[in-house]
Amino acid sequence: MRLTLRDRSARGCLRSLEGECWIDRESRGCEFRDARLGDRFRKLLKQIGSAMGRSIPLVCQDWANTKAAYRFFSNDRVSEADIPAGHFQSTRDRAAAAEGLVLVLHDSIAPAKTALRGLMEEEDIGV
Image (cartoon, rainbow, N blue to C red; front, side, top):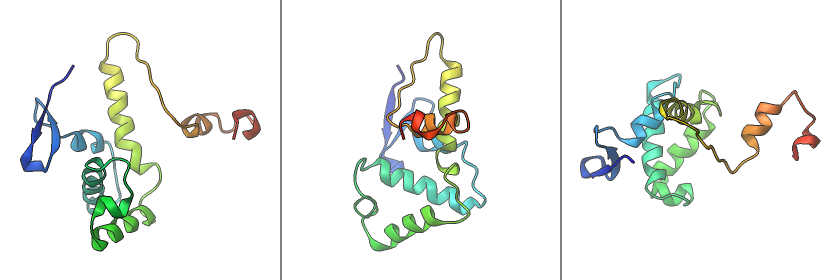
C-alpha cells in the first residue's frame, strides 16, 4: 500500500511519497496537439477531482472556468481518445508492475463494445 501526503502548495493534490501528484501521473500519457490543451486538461482534472460527482458548473465555480471547460470538451483538436489516454497508460504501467493476478473492474459496456466492434453484431453485445 502506498502512502500519500496532502501537499497544500498544489491545493490539495494528493502526492505519493516520491512527490508526484496523481494528476501528473495520470495525465503523463496524454498527448494533445497543443500544450495549452494539456494544461487545461490538468486544471480540469484538479477541479473535477476536488468535487467528484458534481456538475461542471459547480466544479468550476464561475462562468469563465465553466465556459473554458465546455470549450475544452467541444474542441475539435481534442478527441475522445485523448482524454483517457494518460489514465489508460498509467493503468497499464501499474498492471505490468504488479506481481500476480490483477483484477480489473469497470462499470461500463463502452470498453467492451469498442473491443468487440466488428466481431459481433450490436444486438449480441446488449446495446
